[in-house]
Length: 297
Image 1 (cartoon, rainbow, N blue to C red):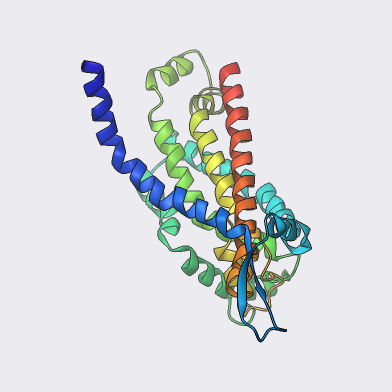
Image 2 (cartoon, helix red, strand yellow):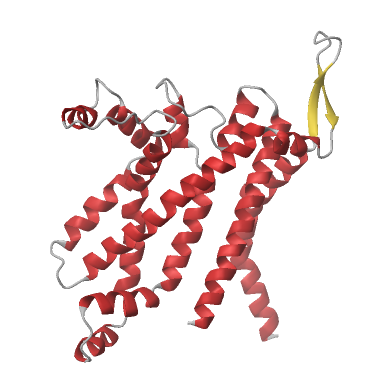
């Protein structure tokens, strides 16, 4: 009887969550999968209207066979190689610095570093487009006066430009996560290490960082998933800046272009599903890897 009451209570408490999860996650994903299996074809040389026909996996084959879609994953790979290490190391370094005994005005620096994250992504991208634009940007003018010439919109400069915008947006947010984890570390452990003669560097990297490994793994996982969804920043750079960023620069932009510029919703859905499967696979790999490392530790 007690077990039955516990089961009913759990069902009542979890019911709203699963209902919301079904509405906002399961149903849209199921609809995207269904949509990806169909395509629209015109009859009568384009004068007979369109009809939706079942195409099976043709949209998936078309997406994978499109060079622009595959190159989007290459761009994401380069983005992740630069962005993820810089974000993790930078956020962790700032958190360790704020948690150290040498830190002053912790509240001020926490707020100052977190504030960029409060700016919406579109606004942040627009601000940086202004700062990247020659004849408008004081940053570009200062660089040119110092003999430094760099085109932020060129094919070589587009990726670093977007990485910089993303770092500006997310560095402070992840720093707060690491700092909160560091604050939960048992201070008696740190005091014991200090008594044993461990210096600040040894305490930071041999005690603090291993103790917040779970937070680092969580941030790494979320950052990888977020990196695969790269869309807002390159989209803003693509609009009216003469940038080397094309309308299919990332897989998300490829799906957006297919849906809203070419009206090919089946192809857009197939590209989205392929991107989601890639994110799920990488999430599984990262989770297994960090779990194995944690067990060994």
